[in-house]
Image (cartoon, rainbow, N blue to C red; front, side, top):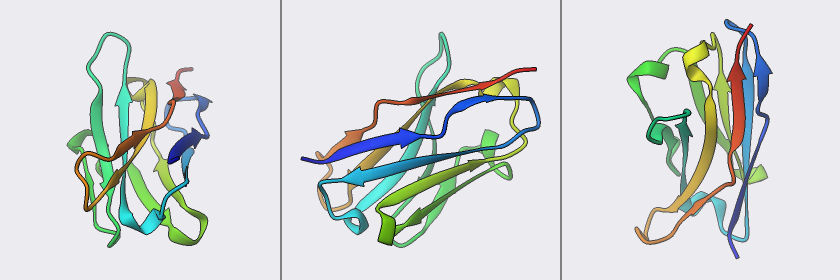
Length: 118
């Protein structure tokens, strides 16, 4: 059974940094695109970045230049490095793993809270 588990959230001051990790188990990691979503209170969930099996990445405009996603296939882990954090980055961050050959196979983590506040 495929499982996705995020970690690394917490409280950080504006301008600070955090790194989120996302570990996939029960599947062949390099068959999955790994994405990060976030959902702020009272707002819709939004896609912020994806890294596919070929290490091709894309980013939401609001995080370009501040956030970096990466993956380590040897560790079955994806990362989200977040720098220059702003209060508006406060949200629950979710990792997903989507099979690149099967559109119906996407797995979500439980989410990790990121709070940016002084």
